[in-house]
Image (cartoon, rainbow, N blue to C red):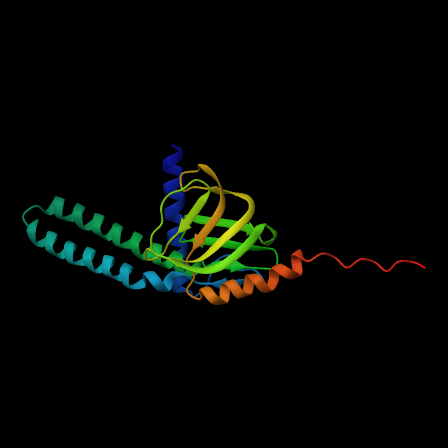
Length: 203
C-alpha cells in the first residue's frame, strides 16, 4: 500500500508540474534564486517521446484487427507519453533553489533535498560523466553527467523515492549554469560562517 501511495503522489506531482509548466510558473522559489538543470535532458526526452509516438502508430496498424487490444495499447502509450512529458515539466518547474539559509537540491518530482549552507564545507564545479554507487554519496545526474560537487561537514538525511532514509555527506548535481551556482553559494557562505567581531574591551 505504501508503494502505491508513493506512486500516486508522484504522478499527482507530475500533473501539477504540467499545469505549472503551461502557466509558466515555478514551484517552491519563495525568496530564493532558481538554478535550472533541465537543459541537458531536453533532447533526450524529446527523443523518448518521438519513439513512443512512432510505436503507437505502428502498433495501431498491427492491431487493427483486434480493436480492444488496440485501444488498450494506445491508452498505455498515451500514459507513457504523459509521464515522459510530466518528468520534463517537473524538471523545468522544480529547479534547484538557493536562498540565504540553504540550497534546495531537486530532480524532477522525486528528489527534494534541503542542505543548510553552514553544512557545506566545499563546493566546486566538477564535470563527471560516470557515477558509481557509494555509501554517503548522492549523485543526481542529468543526461548522465553532474557539474557541481558539494562536500558536507556532516551528513544530511535524504529520503529516497520509496521512503528509505539515507545519510549523505557528498552530493553531486547538475546545473545548467554550474559556475554561477558555485559562485553564488560561495558568496553567501562567508557571510554566514565568518566569526562575529569581538566586542571592544572596556578600558
